[in-house]
Amino acid sequence: MNALHLEMPWDHVKEKLKEQNVELTDEDLDLQPGKEDELIDRLATKLRKDPSAIKAWIESISFNKGKAS
Image: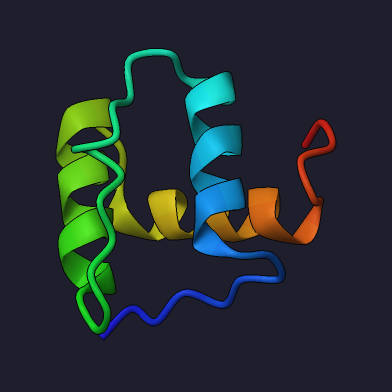
């Protein structure tokens, strides 16, 4: 399981992700408890990136609290 380590609530992270990539929708960023793998895989497929890169991107945004990364 790819548990996400977030420093801010998911709703804030989700908005920052949408700011950085306007292609992302609320549906793309739907996170259900315990289903981080599904979110990561969905984003990896849509953005054509490795799942580990997606996880690092999400966590980076969370830890930077929205600052440029």
